Length: 164
Image 1 (cartoon, rainbow, N blue to C red):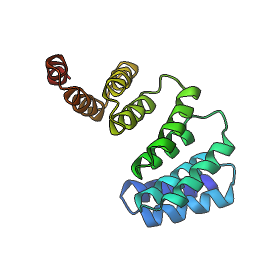
Image 2: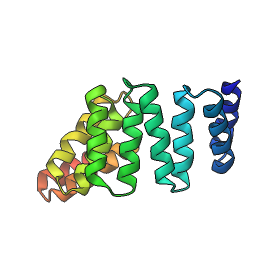
Image 3: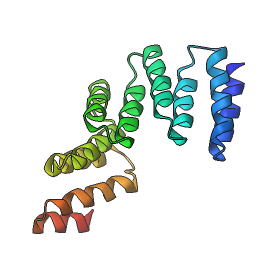
């Protein structure tokens, strides 16, 4: 029964009706309080409306339901990064990395945190690792890498950015 509500929420999320999606995800989570995917989706729907506190609460619930999963930690880190809380973002993303060291999205987000902290060399290393870890790297990985390489302000960095 909860899966049907979750599926409807996914439909509304897909067509960008986040308020409706949130209601369906919330209902799915209420019907089955141990449905971690519903809690994560519920958090995403809140995040789309810039409701960080509620998004973080939903992600934390998912992390309690699946303590060995890196995904809730990743999404908490992304939410903190979105709100420019870089220390907390780094803490949660590092936690996600400890659970799944070669997740390309975790590495990319850590690279972005380092970039925002002006740690460009570390950012480049993490972004290169994200590209290496992904069988089909996202365009954003290369874009982030290019920005980090350009911030190094070296000829080699500019040449590497052009190739990326």
